[in-house]
Amino acid sequence: MRHHGELRARFVSAEEAVALVPDGGRLLIEASGGGVLEPDLLLSALGDRFAHTATPTGISAMSCSGVGNRAGSGIDHLAQPGLLARMVAGHWAMSPKLASMAQDGEFEAYNLPQGVLAQLLRETAAGRPGLFTRTGLGTFCDPRVDGGRLNDRTTEQLVRATEIDGEEFLHYRAPRFDVGFIRGTTADEKGNITLEQEAAKLGVLAAATAVRNSGGIVIAQVKRVARAGSLKAKEVVVPAHLVDYVVVHPEQRQTAETDYEPAFSGEVAVPLGMTEPLPLTERAVVARRAAAMIPLGAVVNLGVGMADGVAAIVAEEGRLDELTLTVEQGLVGGVPARGVIFGVAWNPEAVVEHAAQFDFYDGGGLDVACLGFAEVDALGNVNSSLINGRVFGAGGFINISQSAHRVVFCGTLTAGGLRTEIGDGRLTVVTEGRVRKFVPRVHQLTFSAERALARGQEVFYVTERAVFELTERGVALREVAPGQTVEAVVALMDFEPIVDGHVGTMPDRLFRSPDPSPNPTDVEVLP
Image 1 (tube, rainbow, N blue to C red):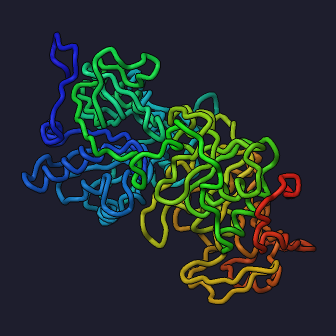
Image 2: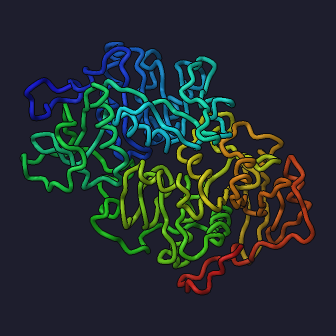
Image 3: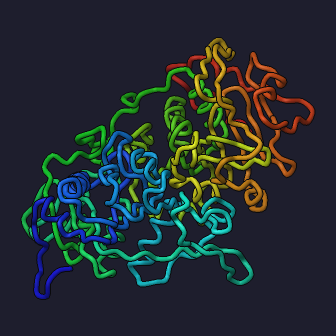
């Protein structure tokens, strides 16, 4: 915490900054996967400090999202026995080493909804006791299921079920912090922080305020320094009185894949032809069928994995002006990126704060959500957070899937070696996948079909060779791909879907190479 009478943040080296993290300290890391706003120098310096000095030990860390690139960066720098006593994260897949340690019980580990964690920062900042929300009810985050706990070593409940005016809610406790790592683009000499080259805002202001009002210290990593008073006031996202220390990292990259892409920060808009189209694979088929379920004028969220291909299809079909695509990290409009840098967008129309985006989602503002799935069971429940027995994490999935009016789950019918040939309006399976994804019971409950039905949501499950719908009686088969039969599809499921009368055929245009110059009016929006 800044000493009495100090009006400016102190500029220090990364090594000096991470030396301020105490044994048993509570550390907040505000960042997202793929290097988005990641204070990478601070995280690597903290990992190096522990490797060389065996301190700090037993810290408790929290990140609202996943932090890393799936290849050793981000919070994987903390994947060293003895460094962590506890980790709370919204997502784990970007840090596979740390996820493996969590699963093995090397420290206490929690996976709570990304939106809940983002919103909790405001509760901590304001001195409130926590967040009361419906998000997580009926899922593995519900304390009556697992409470978001990932191993047997983790016993403390961070969430409890309660009632307000006769309605069920979950109460997530507000955390407190000793140290916070945040990132920006520019700091002036006083410590005011701007984000002009960043691809998102996330919750850097809420994070800094939460740490400050916990009595902790805020350490900001930036790319460059400006003269005091030279920054435009409206561009300052974190004011200097919230920042204690600044670390300058001139080699700071915008994302894990870009040194600086001005189309991600909103500085310029690039021609859409510069975005990479999807090849004609099962991924494209699923994305096309899902895109056809998005009506004119819809506000849409696209999830990571199979579902992120929907953005490329919407752009390919010339429908971007008909829809508003959003990503939970706070991006509105444009074309969301795919892969490891999911969470940024080409040509965004607006960039809002992380928690504000989830406010809109949780309140019912989303018309359609297209999300990936790992497993679907006979009741229509979905697992997207525990994949092949490995901790993946829910991310924003729980907030989004519980609140969208129409939810389209996207994935293949089988996995593990699946190979198909697609063309001329048909799909042929060359090699069947070894893993069945439609199972008697999901291994982790990330989406509750029972609660979706009670909320009146429309729920579909789209694969490369069949489309299903959630009904009061269970999962119903609605369409099969050209070249496939109902019997062949059902034979690859571990439960019998409902088959009522005629089962339709998926449109053959899904299985053809696209028209290079599509007319939006030629694209049929399907039920």
